[in-house]
Length: 24
Image 1: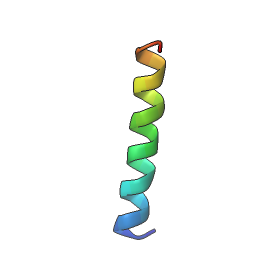
Image 2: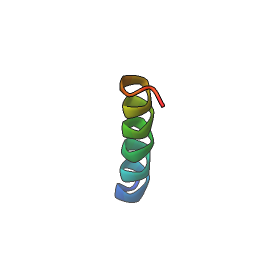
Image 3: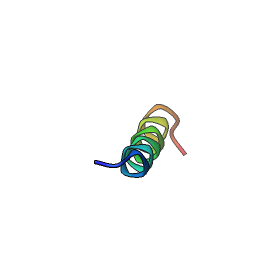
């Protein structure tokens, strides 16, 4: 995996995590 792929994956995980924590 490249640095870029890991970064994108991390961003997606953070988005999901935030979405679960904060109901919108």
